[in-house]
Every structure is written in C-alpha cells, then in structure tokens.
Image (tube, rainbow, N blue to C red):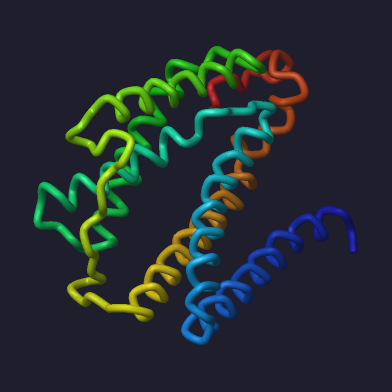
Length: 213
C-alpha cells in the first residue's frame, strides 16, 4: 500500500474503532454498578476538557484557565433552571455551550496575540477574575454555589438509577460527537496547520495562511 492510500485509510479505521467503542460503552451502561456509572460520567465530562486542550496543544499553546468556560456553561445551566421553566436537558446543555462559546470567543479575541507563558498566565488571570466575581456574589451562591434543578429528556424524567444512566448516555454521546468533530477539524486545512504553527508560526504567515485560525 502506498503512503497516500495508507494516510486515507487510517482516519477511516479510527472512526470505525471509535464507533464500535461508543456502541459497546453505551450498551453496557445499564448493567454497570452505580458507582462506575458515576465515575465514567465524570471521566467522559473531563474528556471534553482534554479535547479542547488538544487543539491548543497542537499549536504550542498551553492554557491554565480552561475552567472559565466550563464554569460559564455550568452557571448558565443552573441559572436557566432557577429563573425559567425550561428543564429539558438538551436545551439547557445547548444554552450552556452557547454561553461558554461566546465567552471563549471574547477571551480568544483578547489573547490571540500572546504566546508561551504570556498566553498561559493571561488565560489563568481571566479564570481567576470570574472566580473572584463568583465568590463575592451571594446571589450566585458565593463559595457554596447552588443546585441545578431536576432535568428531563424530551419531557421524560427518569428517576434513580435510570436518571444516572441517562446522564451517562448524554455525556458519552456528546463526547463522541465532539471527538468526531475534532477529528474532522484536524483533517481540514486549518487543522493541518496546527503543527506548522507550533514549529514556526512566522513561516506559516509568510506562506500567506495567517488568515486561517
């Protein structure tokens, strides 16, 4: 097999392997012990953080403030549950992701010119600013936080172990979709430039590709 054919086959194999793994993990969910369901749910949620970090790491950027965006999403979900009648998990998760995305765009706009330790420390500073605001705001629970209202799945509200499995499936599905989208991104022109940008960003600009990003 020539190198070009091998290069085209590897993503297909990775996608197939990921699909099989997803089906297996989803199928065994109802038979897992409750403690393992909870642990796996947290693990897949943390994997979402890693997906975001991988994109930045490939370009040579190391952030210390990624908790900022997940805090924005979490508080958006909690506030929607407290002040609106919306309880559907798909709606509130999408709303939380949208709020986090808007914040990421604004912070990214401010940090786009910084690299290395400056990028790392400024990203941490942004996260600490939000932390300071949350600690001093009693309406947002201060250091105690506040609970998230019970959710539903398209009008259906599972209880007990069934609810834990439903959340497990939700987090697993979101993680799988986002992992697939990140994989697709790395196959695009912008995604393929992450390594050259890390190695020599100025050279990439000289090639006339500085508009991508």
